[in-house]
Every structure is written in structure tokens, then in C-alpha cells.
Length: 103
Image (cartoon, rainbow, N blue to C red; front, side, top):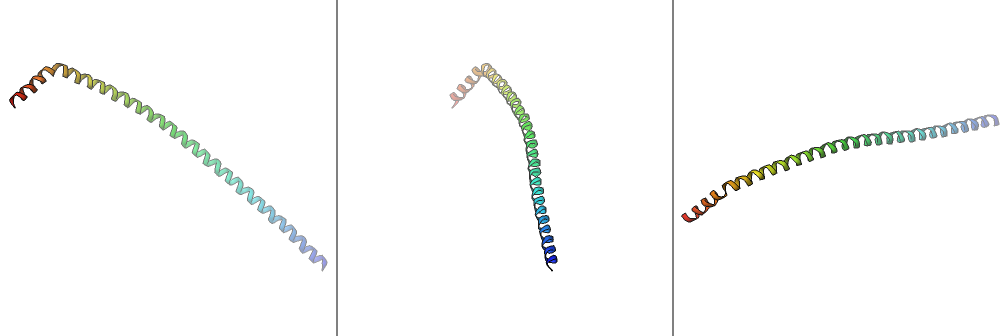
């Protein structure tokens, strides 16, 4: 009878060891999975940030080009308006004065 009890205890201890080993393996696998998950996430974030940076530079270039174009158009329009004023100012003043006299 003692032999049977001793065998049962022995089997129980062996099973307990195997269960503990399985738990350790499970924790290792979970830990590895979490590390891999973080690695994939970080890689995705880095790649996405790189794409954002490239797009940001493209947009900054477009903005600078548009700003330069608008500035040039503004200067051209101002020059044309100034020229028109210089050529027509006497005529406009005369017209305004004559309209005022009619009132």
C-alpha cells in the first residue's frame, strides 16, 4: 500500500512540475508576443511618421511656391494700379470736381 501511495505522490509531483513548466512556457510566449506586438506597432508608427514628414515637406514647398506666386501677382497688380492712377489721376480729379459743381 505504501508503494501505491508513494507512486501516486511521485506522479502528482511530476504532474505539478509539468504544469509549472507549462505555465512558465505560457508566460514566456505571452511575453514574446507582447514584445513582438510592440515591435510591430513601433515599426508602424515610425513608417507612418516618415510618410507624414515627407508629406509635410511637400506641403511646405507648395505653400512657399503659392506665396511667392501670390506676392508676384500682388506686386504686378499694384504696379498696374499705380500706373493707371498716374495716367488717369488728373482726369479723375476733373470728373469729381465737375460732378461736385453740378450738385
